Image 1 (tube, rainbow, N blue to C red):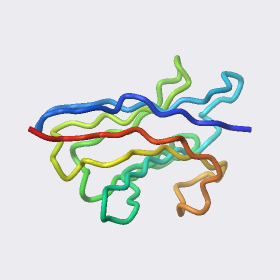
Image 2 (cartoon, rainbow, N blue to C red):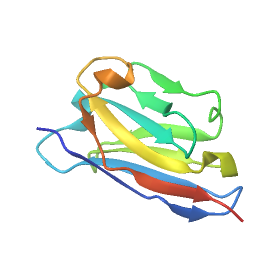
Image 3 (cartoon, rainbow, N blue to C red):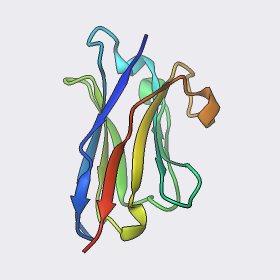
Image 4 (tube, helix red, strand yellow):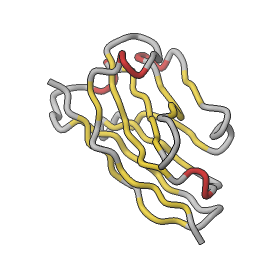
Length: 125
């Protein structure tokens, strides 16, 4: 069973950067065989898919709100999926979750069978 763990959240000033990491608690499970998505949810707002990387890296997705500022990638040496967040804005403040599905392409939230516990990102001066 795949269990995901997010890390890298914290407090950063506007314009700053953070790098989130999504890892499997079981080192024998290769995240390359999963489509991995990052979601976020801010107080008073609905859950938003911010980025996704498909199995075999056949496609990547970015929400319009983060396009050009966020980059999703795989670090195969560490069996992790990274979300590099640059030029952060206060509206990026949210709890960020990674999620996994064995579907070959980025999909709907209900299709993701594994979710991490979430990591808080706060962008404030």
